[in-house]
Image (tube, rainbow over all chains, first blue to last red; front, side, top):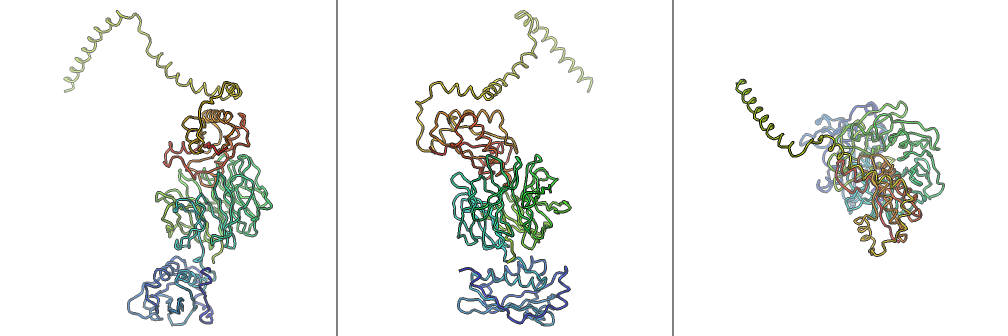
Length: 412
Length: 204
C-alpha cells in the first residue's frame, strides 16, 4: 500500500475565486503568511512529521515568507494583522481512529477564506500531507504547483555498498530501494516518476537495470555492449540513451526499455559520454573528448547536427537541461576545481555558480528553481540543494558518501 | 670594526694558502696529473638511463618474447588453486603487472608496455586462466566521463596483450572509473597509482 492511498485530500470548501490582490502578488512579491501551531492535537504528535516540513516548504517556496507570531492572539484575521502578514494559515486537526484529519484554511486580513482544503492520512503520511498542502498553497498563489512532493534519487554507500536511494526534496524520508550489495550508481528517473534506470557493477560487468520507485519490478536492459553507464530515459518515449562501448570506443547509444531497437548515435573514435535529453526529446547533449579535452556538445536525437556548447574550462561533463530547455547546467573545471556552470543553450553564454570544494553532477528541480548537486566540501561526497543563483544552500545527506543526484521530472 | 674584520679575514685566508702550500706538493708527489674532476661525474649521471633503454628495446620487439618462451617452462612452481590467493601470488611474483597511465590518457607508456609484456608471457605459459582487465582513473576527473576513460584504458591494455599472442577470448574488460581507487589519498602519488589497468585472474 502506498502513501498516496493512505492520504485523501478533498476540497473543504468551494474554492474561492482568486481575488485581484492575489493576482497582483503573482508577480514577484513575497506573500507574508502567519502559520500558528496546529490545533486539535498535541503539538508533539504533528510537530516533526507535519509542522516542521510545512513551514520549511513554505519558507523555501520563493512565494511565501513566514511571519513571526505575536503571543496570545487566536489564529484568525486578527493574527494576520497583528503579525503584519497578508494571510494566516489556520490548521485544525482531529483524529478519527488511525487517521489524522486536517482542515487547512488560508484567511486574509478581513477574515475571508482564500483557500480551504481537507486532508486525511495516518501518522506516517503526515509529512506527505505537509508537502501536499504546501504544493496546493503555492499553486493557489502562482497557478503552478510547488515541487514539495518531488523526489531526489541518488547513490549512497552508507550500508557499505553503493545502492540506489530516494529522498524527499528537503532530505527527509531517505530510503534504500536496491539491495545488490555490489556497486549500483547513476540513477535516472523516468518521465512518469515511476521508474529509475541505473548501472550495476557485478561479476566484473557493468549493466543497466530498471526498477520501480518502490524497489520492485527489476528489469535487466541487455545491450551486449561494454559500460552501459549514464543511462537516461527519453522524456517522450520508452527509450533510454546511454554510453555503450565496443573495443574501448565509448559512444552514445539508444535502446528501448525492453532491450530492443539498439542503435548508435555517435561514431567518432574519441570518447563520448554522459547523454541527456532535452525536455522535448528532440535533442541530446553529451560529453566528447574529440577536441582534446572533455567538452559539452548538443546533437539532434537522431545523432545529426552536432554543435559544441562549452568553450570555457578544460574539463566539462554532466550536462543536464533546465525544464524549459533554455539552459544547460554542467560540471566545469575552473582553476583546478569543479564548479556548477549554467549556460544558455542559444547564446552559449555561461555563468559559474561558485561554491566550496568540488561541485559536480547538477540536477534541476522540476520547476527549474533549484539545483541538486554533489560536493566534497565536507571532506566526503554529500548531496546539496541550492537555488540556481547559488543561494539558500542546504545539505541533504550526511551518512556515508552520497552522489549522483537526479531530481524526479514531474512536480508531483 | 671593519678594519678589524678585514684583518681577521686576511689572516684566515693567509692561513689557508699556507696549508694548501703544504698539502699540494704532498699530493703531487703521490700521483702525477690529477684527473679533471668534472668529466667523471657527468658520465655517472648519464648511466642510470641504461635499464630504461634496455626495456624499450625488448618491448619494441615482441617476437623476441615468443622466442624466449621456447626455453623450458617453469613447471616446478606450484600455483595456488584458490583464485584470490593465486591473484596475490601473481602480483608478488610479478606474473601479472598492472599498466599505469598519464592524466586523461589511455596510451601505453614504455613502462606500461613492459608490464603488459611480462603479463602476456605468463598468460601464454598458463593458458588455463582467463583474465579480467579493470580500467581505473584518478579522482580528478568527473565520474561519468572517467567511466568511459577507464573503458578505453582497459581495452588498450587488452589490445596490447592480444597483439603479443594471448587469445582475446580469454580476456574481458570492465571500467570502474574513479569508483574503486587503490590509494585513497588526494595527491600526485595517489593519483598516479589510481590511473591503471588492473589485471585480475578471473578463473579457469
